[in-house]
Image 1 (cartoon, rainbow, N blue to C red):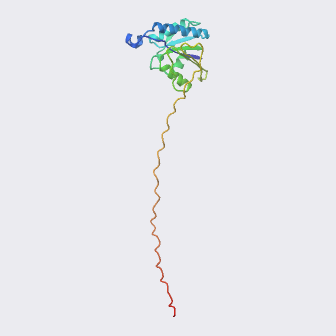
Image 2 (image 1 turned 180 degrees about the vertical axis):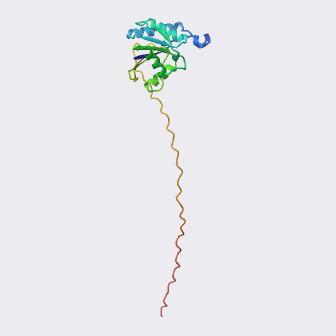
Image 3 (image 1 turned 45 degrees about the vertical axis):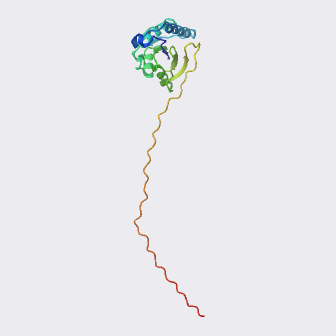
Length: 202
């Protein structure tokens, strides 16, 4: 199975609507169309498209899906809602569709964190409109397929820095063991004998 993690394109500012209702700007719509055009040129076909329920993600998914071969149906998946996802949840949702190529349209930092979890690296930040593709074999092993950055014409290597390892706790130093004090009394010193000097005759 190939999984495409697609961050939504540009949306209106937060002050224009509630976060859930923010819609794509004209530039965002154009970017979604261009992303689909590049995918089509790369012969990408989606069997299923899952999206966050937020308006900006749904619109990105619908615009892209309508322009790819197969015109896959778009389905809302709650695991793609901001702050709710993980790689395990995304993989399970994608596998449940039964498709060989599944797109997941969502948000940062969830998508980038999921890519890092899948590859065993630190999170990989995805720009708006960027697409990260991962290969998942039947045993669940994940390998990187590539990154299609906004404006790029082909897949680039997808990799991130190694995940930080937990710092090992320093072992507590054991208290020094005092040498046992001997209670034995030292042997008494013997008195020195006075030397006898013979008188010398003159």
